[in-house]
Image (cartoon, rainbow, N blue to C red; front, side, top):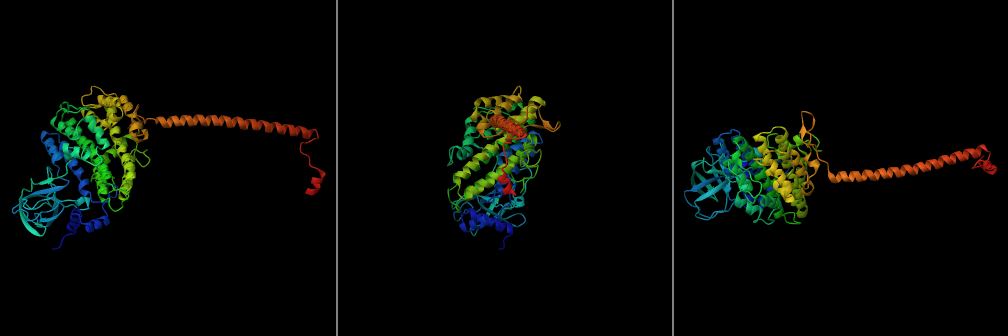
Length: 550
């Protein structure tokens, strides 16, 4: 039986997933599509596609009806675009046990072959199995079965329903399922933060647990599922139950709720999971081992995908992205930090140039087993991830204070603050309280200067510079908004002052020295001229010397 090229590619993926070193080595020799310029070392098209759930959710939120919000809530919790799988009931139980990743082949509605793989290990005599649809290396066609909770679905590559046949380990099995209900998404935005998942993967169940930045958020909010709790409370219009940083979403209309939900999913749920994947790569890194670090590279690739998404394409040059890459590009246009030098008002953010350089370096460090260096690179990446959150918080603080910002702007400010307050609190609870009091959901007023000063007070300890943040630019006047200019680097300023004073002192000393020498030289010239006029020059040539010269 001849397989299509797409099926061949997915077959290789299944073989690799099942642990075949032969196929795994072949896969490593294949090249993968770039992710906004980054060259992944593994197939992560399915991971990048998480932004399609974000896009579908935002489309429903934009309709601003109770029904559309419920659709968005289902997409948030149930997904549909990432890790697609079918829940199938076999008419005859499995005759042999199968392992996670084992190849399973069926057909779609048109009779074309559809490749899948076992979602988990299944014992002999099991009747209900999950089959994950295989994905390709091409982002545009990574999978052709996207259903889950999506309003607009794609069933071209789904198994035929309601009855069909599968081939598993050489044996034929008949199955039944409901194509509309039993095709689901195994990776969801909610899943990044649900209690057990977040707790086990970031605080207590991982090799490097607790991850430092997740611990900041746990300490501040008092919940492992703080992001999920924020989103669900917003959907329900209820008050959160945090240790610090509570928000009463009953005070918002659908407009405000929509902002804290769609930004919260990206800047709370996905943001922390990017960090989780970076840390997971470090957990798996084997020092000084070149051929045994595929797992950490894959985790690293996943982090880049969750940061970027699929919409950004191979070069990251779109304005339609939905995740953190696009956020950085938006904020750089507000703060004049775009371009390679970070001085432009348009184009890719300098932050993204810096991050993708670090992503590439980290990939190489992991591939070569340079784990200590990869850890330093990871720390630098994570620090930079907070920059757009700070920029966003200060921008909306200014809008609320000076530009008559309404519910929409205040809601945006609240969610940006929520994404960075735990990091500030870890340095200065006082600074965090100032920011929270001015940016919280029910803040009676906002003082942008107080918010800006509070952030700037912790820059040094967080590892961020004034240059990283920039200043809030006013396109109308072609200058910075008053009070929102870039801050000055205290240490650099002090050094400059010391250097200037030293240079001034040196200049005075040199001036005095050269002045004295000039005076002495002038006096000598006058003296020699007077001697010459008297007929007794200081320097006299002898007759013998003259004869010798002739």
